[in-house]
Length: 210
Ligand code: URA
Image 1 (cartoon, rainbow, N blue to C red):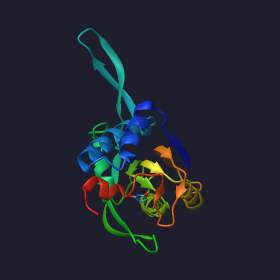
Image 2 (tube, rainbow, N blue to C red):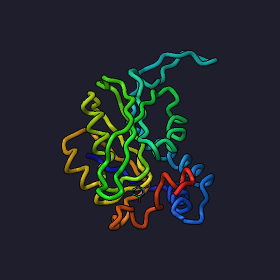
Image 3 (spheres, rainbow, N blue to C red):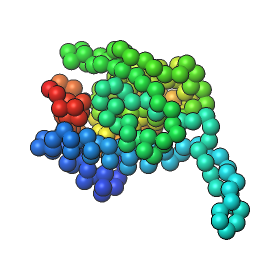
Image 4 (cartoon, helix red, strand yellow):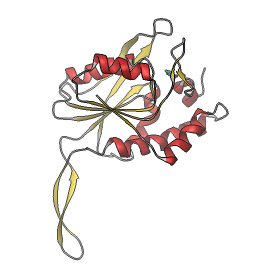
């Protein structure tokens, strides 16, 4: 598994405002959207392309286009949905699948309540959206589901990650073709499974419910 922490002043600036408890939901959603687009730019560095022959107003030339099969973007409901627009802004031709997982607040174990994915993901590049890589449980279950369906190139885009979650993913997904792209690897998880310093509950902050 590969971890890529995007080191850029605009990413750090937006992340700082996201973390701030005074940031209201509309601002949080807008900043998360902008941050995802910046992370997506890095995450798609290896998106597959194919040669395209075109004619400019001046001459014939050769460029590239995104290759087929189209990449697929999979937001993990609920909070991953707040990352979808920021991602498809860069990849408008991507297909979109959905996975809904909920974490039991006591056991912290995720279970699947919605699954709308193509049966066959072989040969597809998959971009999974989940804002908080905390224990890693949700992403591990999700990525195993994608690999079971044949995905051979999975990139998870997370606003924040905790070292514990990265370790769990490395243990559970060793040898799988997975990359994690994030704006920060924070200090640790607290006893309630929140990332420290983190930004709180990403879903609640996006959608304004507690
Ligand atoms: N999920 C969140 O929304 N926030 C955390 O800090 C951890 C998991």
